[in-house]
Amino acid sequence: MNFRTRHDAIIRHLRRSGTASVDALAHEVGASRRTVLRDIAALRDQGFVIHSEPGRGGGLQLDPQSMQTTARLAVAEVFALLISVTAMRAAGYLPFSDLADAGLAKIEKTLPPEKVRDLRRFLDCLHVGKLSPLQDLSDMGFIDPYLLPAFETAFLERMQLRFQYRDAKGQQTVREVEPQAMLILPPLWYLVAWDPARADFRHFRMDRISKPDVIDGTKFRQRHVSFDEDICPYSSLPRGGIRG
Amino acid sequence: MNFRTRHDAIIRHLRRSGTASVDALAHEVGASRRTVLRDIAALRDQGFVIHSEPGRGGGLQLDPQSMQTTARLAVAEVFALLISVTAMRAAGYLPFSDLADAGLAKIEKTLPPEKVRDLRRFLDCLHVGKLSPLQDLSDMGFIDPYLLPAFETAFLERMQLRFQYRDAKGQQTVREVEPQAMLILPPLWYLVAWDPARADFRHFRMDRISKPDVIDGTKFRQRHVSFDEDICPYSSLPRGGIRG
DNA sequence: CGAAATGGTGCCAAATTTTGGCACCATTCA
DNA sequence: TGAATGGTGCCAAAATTTGGCACCATTTCG
Image (cartoon, rainbow over all chains, first blue to last red; front, side):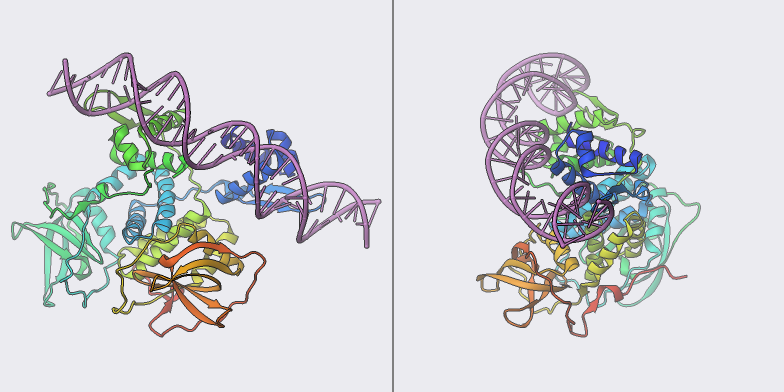
């Protein structure tokens, strides 16, 4: 009996019998006391809540609440988490980002197929590169919290987006564009969009966008965006897993 | 990367990319072709329906209908996710952080109450500020993967920590200190600790710490750490939050 | 009080499983 | 035919798991 089967057996036994001692479990699953104690620790690490009571009449007890633990996240939430973990990895904090990424993989596994498809299409629009050191960062602002929900609709439904844009000189203009890609040049974030009025691509710094709104009834086709060679799509980013 | 994590990663990749070759997967998860083939067989045993097509243009494909509905994140994974989001927000790299927060809130709900309490206590030790531009970043290294688990114990149980420290001149010394706070001055991370031998606070750059170990049987009291005024605790950090 | 029953930890060597590499087979497609 | 692809058997090396032991802490019973 390998440890996976054993863990299942232990959980099943605890569920059925309510409470059990380590020795009883050890006998039940045919393993040593030491091994069962290790299994209990592992199960606790995995999120099972197992209460224990030492002394005569004590034993182990599985908290029934810990059995239902499904977090149903929205696509945008998973996306937001993913980019934060990606940024963390890019910054070189592997121990943290690897663990966080493993957690996200579990969450993704539970996402329904159509959400995974949306997530993939969203991530396909994401590109990462290095910022030129010449950029002026002194006027970095905050990104409108309504931007991501608006992006979600605009990118996935391929609908035009209207927003106010404040250019480098502080001029406010209203734009109506076709969102084609998102670009991260840490710490700056850009929207790459086709501007039909100018018949050309434009880069918009996200912290300069306000009042984003999807324009009803519009539909556009995806265009090929060509990036510099030092900018790579998120999906081909080097990932965790140290190769031996 | 152990086989459980690898299985999660493989499923994630297959779901995201629709179809993938064994070699691509092997490269992705950092394992050999043989191992991935074994993993695929194991996943099929577990009930995942994975179609395969030999020959040119072939590959593996995960049937979207075969999906798992529950995920149980390890406590450490939730910790890592929270820290990632927190740190990236602090660094100002992270737009959409309120959405990430919403996702985290859902995930947090699946943790047992005492773990949530631990999480809060851990995050209470986290402080964020701005790095002086004079700092030399040329020798930034990687953070020891054992640091996070060691911190978890040391901070939560208030136990002393022993580690090797490489100072700015490259000198290696062994320190035994009382961890009092974590400080992020993007992109650098510091441990702020009371050094009993020197009877004073010290800042240790995390990428210069190696071989961390909790010292058994030690217990210390929390001290008030005074920070510069431009450094604020994580808990009072400005949050996104959708206005309305 | 002392003894017994219980959970829990550290350590180590033995047992077991996992892994990577290799050779080789079958299928598909250009 | 040759290249790209999935798949299997085998083996030694690497990594992990396991059991045994000593020992600690807490609780309850007599």
